[in-house]
Image 1 (cartoon, helix red, strand yellow):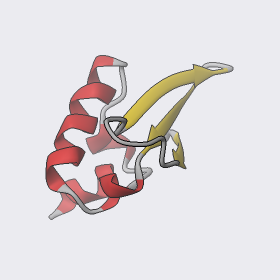
Image 2 (spheres, helix red, strand yellow; image 1 turned 90 degrees about the vertical axis):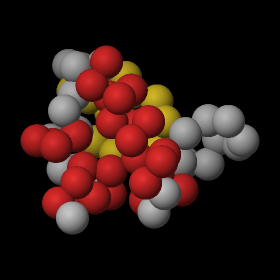
Image 3 (cartoon, rainbow, N blue to C red; image 1 turned 45 degrees about the vertical axis):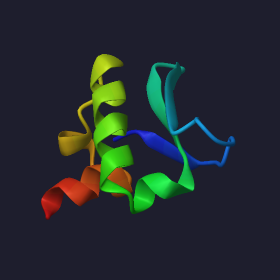
Image 4 (spheres, one colour; image 1 turned 180 degrees about the vertical axis):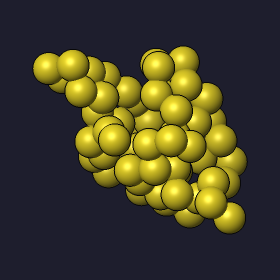
Length: 67
């Protein structure tokens, strides 16, 4: 499971991913909690960073896949 930080970094910034001490940290815009289009883009970004939101389910992006 990743650590998730919800942070509004302004227009055009939806998510970021980084590793701290080997642990994945996901930074998400508040809109990622409810917007399916943003969630899909976040899933693609995280997959490119080596994290599968479907198995992590540590944030609204991962749990939205349950529906």
